[in-house]
Image (tube, rainbow, N blue to C red; front, side, top):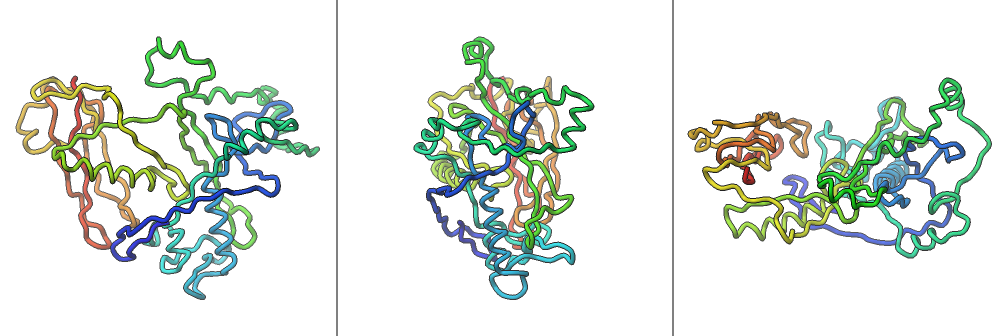
Length: 372
């Protein structure tokens, strides 16, 4: 959890709560079945697509926690703790950012509310539980049991009647091969090696009164799982060497906070480590260079003939202003992979002011280049 100043949005501290969750009964958290195998389970559980281990998503834990806490307190507006909101037909998540629940779980952007203070990570198997399930003699599927009920969905029956080919198991069409790897190296990998795998899960909103799904609010959410020995790398360049220490501290903080979408449900967490060898050659002034970042030319860049024999693409960057329902002004930038006759310095552009406190909103268009 994060303590924040309600006016300035200043992070004062982070509190980490860790523990072990013990299942006292059978546990089923539904996943997304890409294909249907004859004799297979109709309602599968969610698994890590890289190692096939079952886990409890942070979104399931956080969503259930919020739903129960709001149902116990009733409709918001009757006290400082908050509750669920009512639109005249259905009960939805609370929208009052001044309540305790609103501050803890956050509110929708259109309400000009506060961001969430609670982040819930995925719950993975402990090594002891993993080994016990691997050695379980009565598991019907990997590390799980299958409960059999004699029924068949009419929609599935009619679908198969129209085309028996619908029963073909096509799960492996969604497996991604080794990316960014030389063919000679890839040939030595095991046939079932997966560098990264995309997981897609259905998500929906629940009525706070009866826990039924709200019509029209079903959507699918995707995320990427990397091989334990794989991942992403990046380069950072410092005009002022003394800034490196602050950068490393900010990177550690960012890893705890997460990047990308759905961070409050535990996504985007990472750990960064230094590379033993930088895999690219640094660009030299006056020599061809390839951009590794988005670039917006500075006045000094535009006074030179940097577009001579250039090969580039232009992209449009916008996005939302954090903590508000307003969008940033769009800006054209040279895309990553653009090639110029010399590396560009680029610039940092002030786009606008934050609608709440007036602080400047920046877009970093400084260039990072490799020898081209």
